[in-house]
Image 1 (spheres, rainbow, N blue to C red):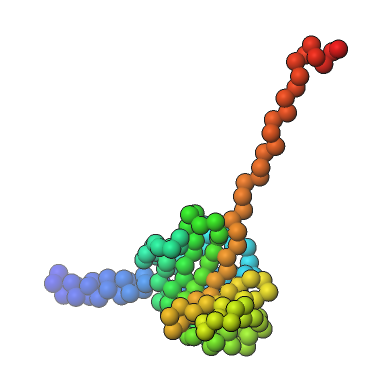
Image 2: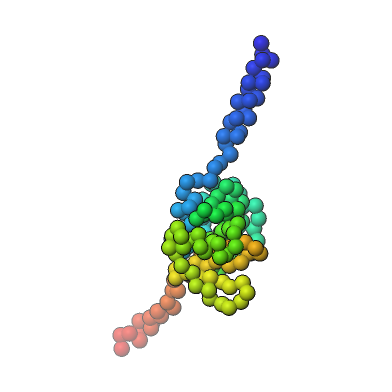
Length: 172
């Protein structure tokens, strides 16, 4: 009797493991899409925690960023296989995404769905495109990378301490 339950238990365990694989969150387009368009506050710790929660630990750490595989994710109808978020070594806080499309196609998709326009800011063979809020689309081999980078806020500068003259000098 006991042996007939083993296949059933194995099947239940396998189904449970398959169900544990996380799907792309429904908030991905809103959270990451608005971040790379510079339409939201850029906080690298927030985005790091968000990506770890839904896509597990980063698969690499290079170029001042943590890189996450985002299997199944899309923005504006284009597949987004990777998202990166800055670490604390850069003077910038940034969030970026790699798109499985050339920059021209990514730009067209964003214009069609969001109305967000870009301007070519150089005349090279692989021009950088920039929007008014400062989002950029750049070439990443044959694909596109879109990102928002902002200067890291610096702590406020404390004014030098005011030195009071000795008590004798103040009473004269």
